[in-house]
Image (cartoon, rainbow, N blue to C red; front, side, top):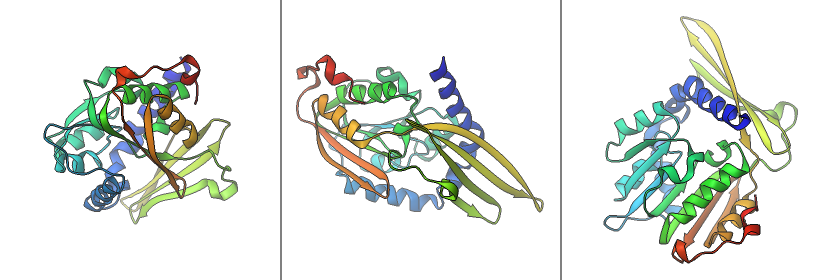
Length: 264
């Protein structure tokens, strides 16, 4: 029941506070797409062969989906926010949008994919190590031989921010300011987003909170290796982790021992 409550709180946080301002939060959207296009290229994503399929987990507004469609992939975009998926579908009708909870694992996977992405901070939005393991297990099992898996997320496992360093200005302009406040627990972090908005010369305040996992990059790469993937890179720049791994054997050729399934 506790995990269900956390999942509901995250969905409510996005539906009531973040989703309506998400495009604004990104700044100039074409520039954000261009940055994503460059990042995908740097992580090894090139033009798709005919019929190549891609799965974008936590697709949001389509920062990765849109460039992947341009590269020729048949993209399935999965997200738990109906509002964000609606905007994605309007901007990129070629993609197949699927409203689903990522923790559902195999339920939204069909067949195999040449490319699977889970970018932004999607993995840390999950509500337990078991849910992370479920997503990684499903992604590994459905990655085609030679396929590429790309993960990015924030590493919150370092020393906790203290005092006023726990306040982070996300974006601000004359009409709106978004600030987040971080509180550190042993295995997760409580994020409070605060939005100040100005209308008719008066300022109002809205606030909401949700949890993120303090997810260790080494635990994620170990989990991928245990599932037969070759980890090509695991970089961390300013606390943002980028992992790329590929499949060299067919999923049904893999055998996991029980100890390997408890790494996170």
